[in-house]
Image (cartoon, rainbow, N blue to C red; front, side, top):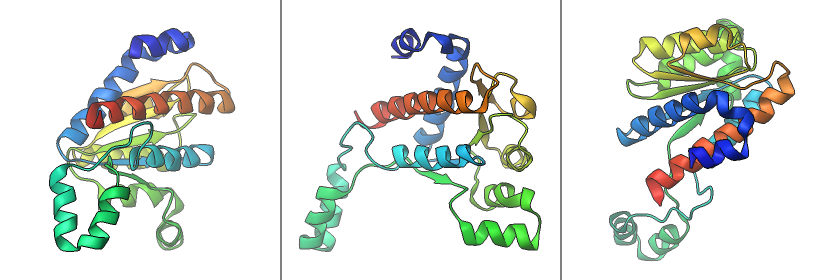
Amino acid sequence: MLDKFIEKHNDLLVCKEEINSAYQLLCECYSSGGKVLIAGNGGSSSDAEHIVGELMKGFLLKRELKEEERNTLVALDETKGKYLEKHLQGALPAISLSSHSSLTTAISNDVNGDMIFAQQVQGYGRKGDVFLALSTSGNSRNVILAAIVAKAKGMKVVGLTGTDGGELAQKADVCIKAPSKETYEIQEYHIVIYHFLCLMLEKTFFE
């Protein structure tokens, strides 16, 4: 599938190895019961939300529950359990660190604005989790600080940046550098890349 993806988006050939490595890290994370924490600023913040939406519910597949899960729901409440087993979908745990406005504003006000992601990684992160860091420049201070905390906690860091990579490329275990220096073009590449990663993960765990 990666070869077909690169054939369709041949300008991403320079990222092929990193895309595959990122997929492998994410697979290892989910196979071991981990979760993915995602952060970015501005348009990258919206991308963080978007990625969560693709991972936490069906993307292209229906993601039916396992029989044991369905039976447990029905045993607890036959009527509501049958409703739940019909509508619930399998999920790949993911949290956007941009979503929690009360927490992030409290951190900004009480501590410092550049700590909004680092503090959440400190609270949510566990060894074996992955921090997916989005920064078109690769130098967003709040993202870099969070990446350092993630590494200190034994997490893996996957970066999505532009062609320069910035400081994030030095902090990440894998850094996918979209082949552009223009912010809007980098973000367009990021959408294509993370859609592919989400598709591959869904096929791996639910097909």
